[in-house]
Length: 138
Image (tube, rainbow, N blue to C red; front, side, top):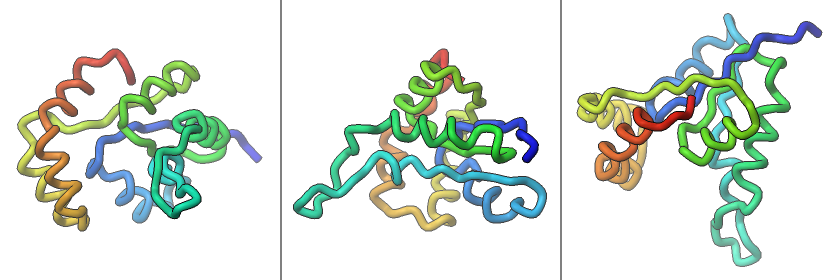
């Protein structure tokens, strides 16, 4: 098996990770790595809680797949980007411009995001987008 030159893309919600995964598999091998599958677990009461192994388990998953696929789409959460930096994983960051909130709300509705998720994104839009732009990660 030939080792691929994997591109790791840390992309903000609604930047097209899942769309690309669903529509471009015929041209590229793509892994859409949803961080929620690594960051949450269910305790003995059946309650959803943060996985104490996160983000190390997510970083391990990313590293294990570098060289196997063309693209790995990953979370844009700060703790994930910091962990990728610490693990020396090269990646690019994709995120919207601050003035694109209205378009992003439309994208969230079109993809079926919950009202709770959309409200959270609206309430934190400026902080999220500004922080990504100002951080030294990616």
